[in-house]
Length: 432
Ligand code: PMP
Image (cartoon, rainbow, N blue to C red; front, side):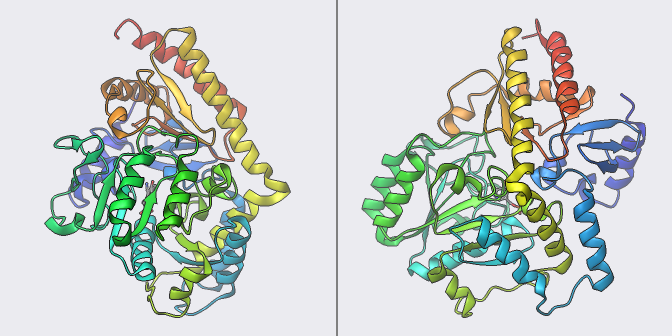
């Protein structure tokens, strides 16, 4: 594969742009530089066209450069990109969110998921008058000091039922984790025990409803409902981080999919159809603290009109014809996931595509995964080799195995991806 222009661009970029990449995830030895994206595909500087299943880390739910979003943003650009004052788009988007996500009575917008999560912890602390927060080992909630703890701890982890708190970066202050309690995922007893012992100190339980940042691990049957019951009993705020699952797993996100109602929800990525906007919302009683400014929510770029125009166009597209677009995304995901599994099984390849349909994860070897400690038993070298070989076939997904579908993916993409997987397996088999 010719990557000469990307390589030259990378060398040039490194001279002024730290590491030559804009995000630590892109810090791989041989990143490609993109010229343009269209529908389900993107093309690099050397003209290689990839079928894209990263789709902006999930933000491009309608695919690359979707006309409905482009039109809405261009129309808004002509009126102004930024007001620093109220505009009608704010309530137009809010009304859609409130309609689509029943647990949300009131909503506010921010620029990124990390920022929104940082804020909802403050809100939950203010509401409960307590300081501690339960977070699960292996869950990612952005990069703030508050939460960049025990996301992917690989050493000195402590016992499985009482994980140590591991700071994920130099520079996080020693006391960054003081107010966190880290627990194993999918272990209701551990949560119950902690709440019984310290419930009066705990403001919130925060979680990814499906652990998509590591392995796509589903909550066990009754686990989310159990968390709902326990948090209600102990007066603890239940926060769903739906940055990945929101407006993707279902119109109403994971809470609709699983039928469990949180107190507060954070969403982002797909919500903005590729534009940098996230948000949070929940029960009126809690959100009134924001509405009345008892907990001030600040931000120069909050509710940016261009991003709101993109979000409105995206939400309208997703919900039109009773969610036809959402159904298409799920259908394409199911086809690809099942097709890959058939290819893996037929060839005795030790890999499985698991989790949901709109987003799934290929893991190897085939293991039952319950929590982060199971996840790290996977063979990452092998998963990365599969990823690299698929890249050479011009199929692009996340290195850790996550595939995300969009409205722009078609049967043709799925067929080409399955053909690529067949060729890759032939190459890799025998080396295992
Ligand atoms: N929560 C989850 C579950 C995420 O996957 C991410 C981003 N990958 C975030 C929070 C952070 O969002 P952002 O990158 O917009 O700050």
